[in-house]
Length: 342
Image (cartoon, rainbow, N blue to C red; front, side):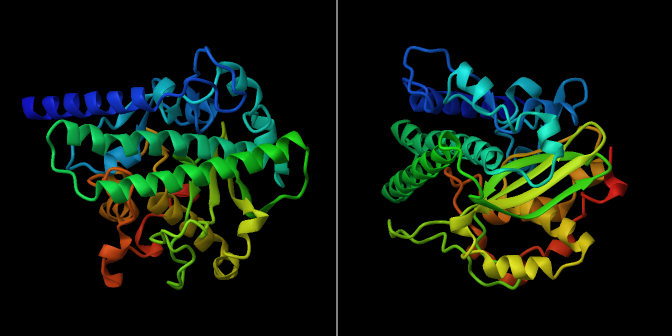
């Protein structure tokens, strides 16, 4: 037990040092300096509140690496999926459309609401990548043997450049009140509350048939990763699910969308659950969910196919697995079905 405590203490210390080094000197959105940064939630707090118990929820990504005790799995609502890159004024006003339950309930979201979600996704992603990118240098200074650090630095540079470009484009959509700049290819309202919440940008490597969509190992600056955005929003008595992208990404995902649309309704929900656990680091579970689901071996295995917590920076690792060892979407529980509602 003492070893576990010491390891957690050490990793918290490393993370805090990286987080301090990653802090900005002005708000990323409005540019105002000398401000108090907001502890901004990626997934709106009112959505997380809907699945909480006594003010707590589970972070599944941390929980899935249960052989590594570096991170806590339960967290309070105030610190669940948060980042500190924007001021309190921007946090309360810039995202007001999508942080409104009545707007979320309406299907056929407009471009302004979609852009707000995308900006939040990339701000959170940038915050995490900056921290992850600094951790190897901190460990190196402390005498750890860190391999391929130059490669890690180049990946970080390319990632930050990409996030900046995405945020600038989405800000332009909002500020110029542009319409029809996004493609929502799946949106559904379920009449029950599912036991987990997700809001995430995902870069899909391969489609249902195994064809490459994004070459996640390409180091060419001119090659652009195309991102899809996934929302699973449990409300008070229902759930809203959406998959969408900006229209520039649609061509890259044409084959994926066609194969997805061939699935029946339950298979689509099943595949969306699969996408969440394979590609997202931002899955929050209700403590009311059964231990059988939390301990499901295939869910844990699936979450390790893309992100490896042993490689700081969230490196893709699915290429290290034999195709026969990868988890098929039908092998995990379909947690979007009514039998799992809370």
